Image (cartoon, rainbow, N blue to C red; front, top):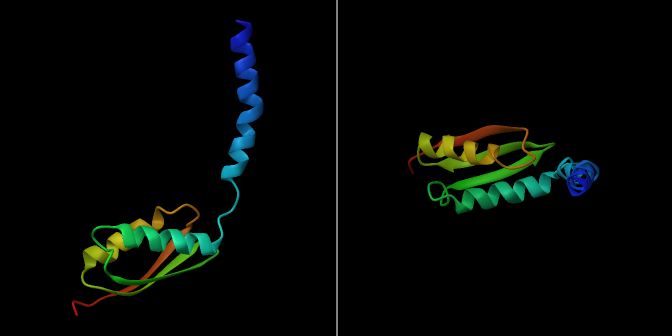
Length: 96
């Protein structure tokens, strides 16, 4: 019983220290890098001409994609990156 109490006490003391690390803000440069990597690694949209920028967590996607499916997929991929607060999808659909 004493061991359980010690483990619980330790978890209550150490737990918040790890939670604080998750609250550190992610810089726009890191967000841009992560979005670019995830887009490049995506099997559907990896070959599309997509440029990525970020300002205060807002990701801006520009460039051309070949269809609406790829446009929607790029936005979805960007939204999943840690630190992204919203996505401005300025991609243009052009089959060329």
